[in-house]
Amino acid sequence: MAYSGRRFCEITAKARRADGSVDAIVETLGSSIDIGRPDLVNTGTNTPANYSVVMQTPAAADGYITGVDVGASGAGAASIHVIQYNGDLTVNVIRTHQITLANGVSEIPLSIPIAAGQYPAISGGAYKFQNSVNPEGIPAWIKAAALSNGATVASSTQHRYEVAFTIKTGLVADVEVAKNGGAQNTGMNLLADADPNGVVDATAIFASAAAHPNPYVPPGSFALTAMPKSGDGFWGPGKLFVGGRRFFVPARPSLFNLYDGFRAKMAEHIANNDVLCLIADSIGHWALASNGPAHWFNRVTQFANLGVADDEPGMTALRPSSTYLPAFYGVTTSGTVSTGTRGPLGESIILADGASLAFTGAYEQVDVHYTQDAGQGSLAFAFNGGAAYKTVNAAGALALDKYSGPSLTGQAASGNYTLTAVGGPVEITGLIRLGIKAAGSRPRLRTLRASHGSYTFASFNAARLASAIAQCGYAGGKIVPVLALGINDSFGTPPATISTNITSIIDTLEAALAPRIFVMPPTRPSSSWDGNYTGGRTYDAALGAIRQTYRSRNVLSVPIDGFDYINSGAYQEGLHFNDAGHDGNALRFIEYVAERG
Image 1 (cartoon, one colour):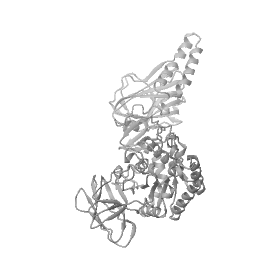
Image 2: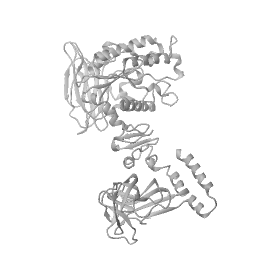
Image 3: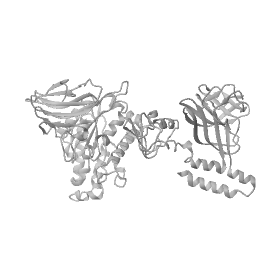
């Protein structure tokens, strides 16, 4: 830590200044003094709320409060203060540090600077005292309220308080501070006891750390059942999972938490039932996350709806493509199926009579977008093999991307859903699966994935964009696109053509009154992909055209191209993200939108 080098020099200088006299040696070495009653217990009477106790033993020299022991019979919160006594039964508060109490006698390490002549104090409630019992006669200044500058206190030896402070000075203090990982008051070491392997629940430790304004989350994975204060103040590289779902905190200290910050930037879209729609290539499609929930766009959906509903992004890739199978996102087929040419990808699934889609989960709404046309059959929705709870007739005059809903399942538990074509074929261009919404929770952010491996800007022609725009209007809102294309263009498309194709897409989206357009430039691939460039094309030439066009159209560009995915180990094979790359990409998208969107 930064502490060690600088403080070591200071310690060395102190030692050299010692001139051999006893006083100088004692001053340099320092001392340790315990203030308060020894042999604390957690029995007796609870102090009232906001009750304050100032011990009447001052620090003999400049040093640190290196610890406080507190007896309590349950969880609670308290403040540790450094107090200046003004000599007229009034005090000023010099420093304050929050602590969390627990059942028992808690030994809480601290590193709070205290100057010679200043006093340690505690404010709060629920710590113990012995009413009218104080055999040692330990004096204290007390106040039946919180402490503030100029507060009036009363001197008393009537009660014994189950609180003891340790104050250390000189080298003794320096060693203790260094041993505890530097100044505890920085929040750098508050989560040191949390399991970084995500096995042992760390909720209580995080709840305790939340009393500090900026607790540092060290590297590792941490399992929680709830995130205190929506993550306010927490920061660092550690990965948090709340109820198994990824919860993001900023990499550096921030005045805002990412959960509320991101949802605030999405507030208009949430309120209007707009749909955040990922228009992308294979990286947005699936590659190469180890599973659906680990994909970066699923991470964004999970995070935005944490505590709201466990939604899946709307799904349009319902047919196998290259090494991708719809089972990656939990969808399988049975019976005879074929591939159509409609939908946001120009690639629909056609269920022959008797064929079905199947998936498992806890959903309050399941719906599809389908093609209505003459000779089409009906689509029967069933749960756990029971009778159809909904049937949609797909026969009629040609109409594209018809919405089957809203279709509430009436189920509150996880189960098996089947969507079966009856009496003829049914063409499906999109699938919607919305999780059970928590009672009293905030409204959800709706998302949809319109992504396909190998696709370029030109792949999203007018018909495909029209389909995506239509599907994103299923709840009455509009499409909010996230364009994450360009890497396939870089391998063989002239820069001027790339700009023309981007302009065509943005023109179409603006004509559809998309309230906002997000873009994510392609990230640089490793040199192992150099053989894919044709006709003298390069990544840099393509990126220049992409960036220039985005800037000229005043869209919000999330600069993921400003991160070194190659040397950070975020690629699986030099181009597609691995799980770490997907996780980092989600964080970069969330943090950039939350703070600048």
